[in-house]
Length: 165
Image 1 (cartoon, rainbow, N blue to C red):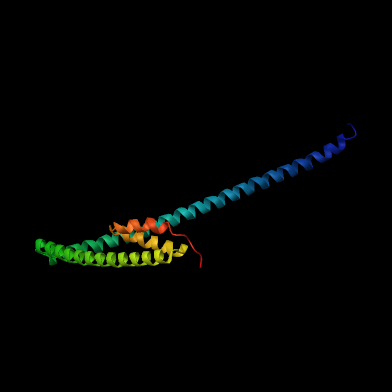
Image 2 (tube, helix red, strand yellow):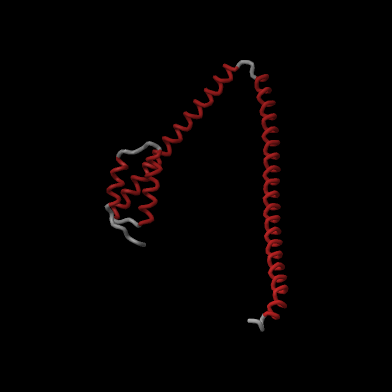
């Protein structure tokens, strides 16, 4: 052990210097990474602040525009009751047209569903694609609050054997 003492005495300052240099490099690396993360967080915070400021400016501008539009409407419409009556009449007209269209679509879909059902049952088989299309149309037909006989067709159609084309 005494023979190693001079070597240890000579190596100790070198090893100590290496350890200190490595520790310093590690600390510097950690500080640099911390600074980078802090910069990234700061940049993200600034981007959010900028986006929020732009959003607020947009909202303020839109509110101002809407306020002006509402003032104009108030000035243009002195008789609110007649305006309300006019809107209700227009909505009633649109509802009547929508009811007519819905009835027409129901009738067309019912006719198609019955025609296809008769075709498939007369043929005695159905392809998986035809079955899926028929059930899809039936679901849309049912969504129009139309059912009845077509529901019984659905159950009978499911009894038909599948056939690949």
